[in-house]
Length: 420
Ligand code: ATP
Ligand code: MG
Image 1 (cartoon, helix red, strand yellow):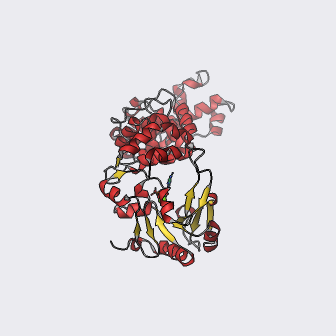
Image 2 (cartoon, helix red, strand yellow):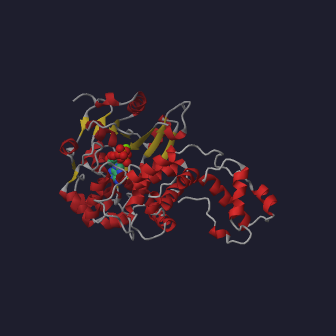
Image 3 (cartoon, helix red, strand yellow):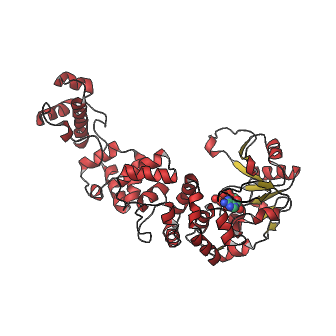
């Protein structure tokens, strides 16, 4: 086998060499798995014989993200220019471990640092994730035949599946994430692992909302999402992480590469209102405010809304909905949504733009109305009409005042500035 270290970038090599100059180091985790499967790895994780304090001394720019558990996040020495913080290269460096017991079903109660890479690999989750590459000579260390499982497409727990799953509920979701292969193919759950998951679904209740969404969002936006969801359903996992939600039939629905849109699609049969559904999902999956807003918006769009494709309503759509939301809406409704979006884009730009030609002060002068709901609604209604009819001058807009009884009508009956 060729030396896998040649796939490391220059900065990855620099980190590895520095670790090897002070102690022992191995490449572990997803990088090894992905390189051996001809997949472009996302990040490199290192294991080392050095203690967390030593790693911190060796790499002065670091974040002790899990010092207690031996994990230090290392950043490049010099902050390179034109880097915004989110794109900065980082490496997770973890001191060799031998775990204690798992009292909370998620994290080991105590972590003992070890000296043996084999022992460290034996506490990892799946055989394909429990291989290491020796940093000093590039040799593959594969005590659980991970390479064989990788080649035959089997996801197998390290050691006794029931014990490993009952130690840590997060492994259930990780299992479903790892059965996805990016080329549209899937790995198969080994029978023991499958049984262990079925028997231990309650372990999911020990996993934090944030971690659940971190894994689940990757699953529902993956190329095999329907198949994986079907399997999750069969194992009793889906209803456990979305309790009380009326989940759509997973083998029939179309999902998206956008995890928020996929989640909305998965829940689109639920009878709650958009805001209620979104806030409930936020509470069980720790969604961000933005994700909450997207789901709330999408869930409340009536199906008929995208059937109605006249220029007036399309202009309102284009003016009142942010471009980001427009794309989410198109994605949510699939081909019909894309068509709707395209129609709205094909319209010529608004003659006078979307800002109101008649502002509040001007409207007060003309009507004599005091500031308040009536004036506010009237201003919005005029602006809506300006957009719908693509009016170009103040005179055009003012003429509208003659078409309604703005002094006496209920302002609530006037169309507001929103879509649909
Ligand atoms: P990714 O490509 O998504 O980073 P990964 O396998 O590297 O996948 P990480 O979360 O970075 O996942 O974890 C690194 C390694 O740590 C894993 O490959 C696995 O060996 C081990 N590991 C992570 N989480 C667990 C867990 N809950 N239980 C046991 N081992 C774990
Ligand atoms: Mg990783």
